[in-house]
Image (cartoon, rainbow, N blue to C red; front, side):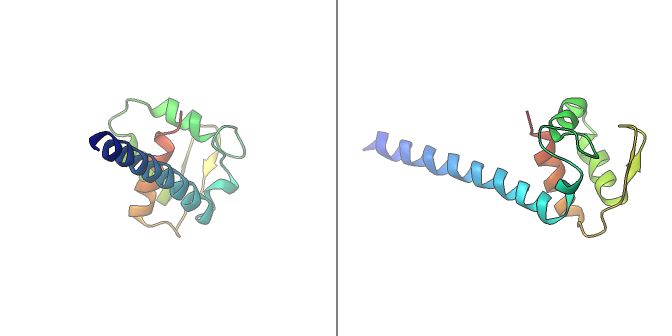
Length: 103
């Protein structure tokens, strides 16, 4: 009986994680991030996987990129990212956390 309960708990956890990943991609789409970015290829902006690789291990990456999503910025990837005023700070943190998790 314990094995069944453990298996069920693992399945529920896996579903929650996958739903979270899909929800964050949905948020990126809703906030028009996917108009300039893709997960695994460069569009107007860098691929999210490239962003995650560039900022891997940087302690200030979440704060730095959250600000960039909200206020815009440039020079890092050779272009300029406009501000996204429709994104709240909480949404920006959620999006950046998701982007940084891409492999």
